[in-house]
Image (cartoon, rainbow over all chains, first blue to last red):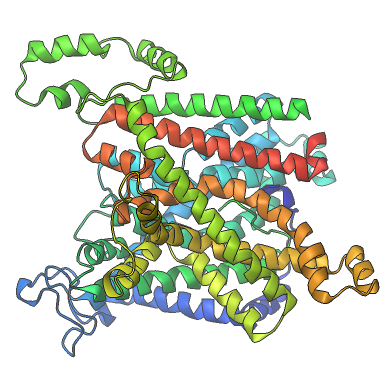
Length: 297
Length: 313
């Protein structure tokens, strides 16, 4: 019924097999287009200082709300900052929030999931209730409440965003752990006197991690959207930093007389989320066709 | 079967209870004391103290929690600190707006998504199928609030076809529907794409089933086979997904309500945060969490009815 019920343990694959899969990944139109979009975003993020024509933070009120021109390729915002430069630097913000958020969620979900699946029934049911409570909080509202308390904070933001994914990763890992914990090699490790910790991390961990990585890759666009949404509300990345969410907020507030801000800012966000989604789905189809997401996102 | 339902019901009870307690603890760390907010910064020490005693803020946290819980289960969500209006009335005033928004979004998503999916599956590999596939994934990935702003820009600012703000005149149905179009469309876009893809996948799966062969062998028209036989079976997973979707829509609705300045639960919560109106914030959140848990519960139940294997678990 949920994603975690359709996950099967994955055997490790040889390097030669992986290479052909990479080829397969890029040979599908969705994988190719998605890969290209992701590559553009990543390159923009890495080489932002070289590519951006101006300082994204430099204010010049005289040039406010300039339409796209030769001087300002995509126009300027409400205090005369160059929109193109802000969008380019925005890719940096998007990735530096989304990726740590995913990593944090994955690590926490992995640990809690393995513990839930491999421990006594009591701990397992406690974990399940914990995951359910966390899952019952609408993620966005949960994040809004906490961020209102502490204010916009670049370092705590990814942690909060990551926590909202923990129940999903945790349940996924728990289901895979339950499925393999009675396999011969796990039992053998126990019979040979391996400690619980050793068995968990040496034998279970490598076998449950593959579907998690695919799920995590597919969650990158969700996290990018999440950050943009919070920044749009003024709660995400602290201001002058050029988050796409801020750009959209400025654009939204001035939508009547400066529509170019919303259009170009929105385009950047769409390219990023669409690219990562296309790539993530192709990744899933190529590496683990059995993992299909249903309902939950 | 009964046991399964009872267990799920108990679980949502525990979940909502846990969520309320968690919220209460979180609120202890929120900057800004309720008494100071209500009485203003210039209130005397003694006045603030007497107010704290009257509100029970001087009691230990566990007594405050149990008092609050008792009130919630009696249906009392407290009183708005700024306007002295019962929170329950505030929530009940805006709740229908949010529920109508979510339902219209789902309805729109089904009305557009299901035919799109069936048609794509029937013409698998055609140009239309590819186009619809691309559109579907684009709609899924575009953030709700961005879809809202872009729709606002096109249909309210440029074309002027629909109003940009508000929920419409109370009591005037036509006017309210008119205000509902853009927010509902913005909220449904992702679900149109999602349902289209899901329908396409299940229809393709069903097309290989034995009963389809039988129907075709009987000499039924392809159209009848598709729309009468296949669609009926393919729609079940879609219905199941809608249950889960309703919960997710509640989250998306917050941003959409803010973009369109539409009165609703999300907008109420957002404003309560901005004005640090704790009782309203707490009450609004509890109702939102309850609705979310309820939607998940209904989704789980629908699985039981659809898939008998779940019952045995």
